[in-house]
Image (cartoon, rainbow, N blue to C red; front, side, top):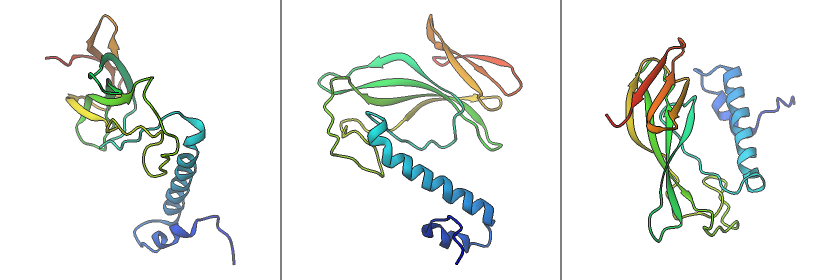
Length: 168
């Protein structure tokens, strides 16, 4: 018997006639590498929050706006993201995420290889999309203006720079 280095969990997927052998093997390898990384987050990071977005983002930047709800052990941080779609409308996105405060209590014994690590359960850990602005082409890069974080400049694949005010 020849060992192809493919986990047995991937073999049923190879029977699918629509998927090519190479694509299936590559997908299985990526999945296995992700599982290995996820198991080792306990040793690498204080906190890991994972969230699947509708489309990948080539850029992400935290905004200086932070909200700290009273009597909560988390704060709400604002993010700027850009979409990279497959021939669909791209967007400049302003989103928010709940992150634990520095003094929040963690319990490392609550390790979950499927979800978040860090024992922090007070926040939902999801990225909440708040504003979507139509964008011409993919958003290769985005950054806010330090003097006025509501002003965001983006770079398109054609090297054009577009400027947006997300309050309007």
